[in-house]
Image (cartoon, rainbow, N blue to C red; front, side):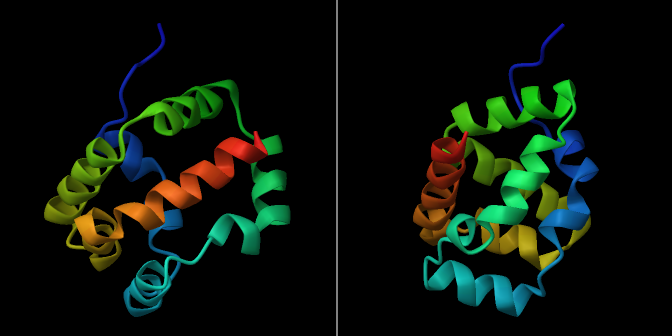
Length: 109
């Protein structure tokens, strides 16, 4: 049965991706509202091409989710893990950064 929401447990599965960039670099990128999808288009396309059906389903849920909801999951991830990258992604002032990058992925698909 297909899941309709992303949870903290789903997020934990990909924690390594969220924490690849040091927190100070991620904050600088978010503050500048950098379009990471354009910068890493080739790598993202390659990654998308190798997703399992379950991963594609989760990506679809993310792409259809409200950014506020996604940021609340990031806030929960920060509370549970203490990883600063999650705190940055949960910050409401970076909502546009998340929206723009999700839009880039939507256009790619």
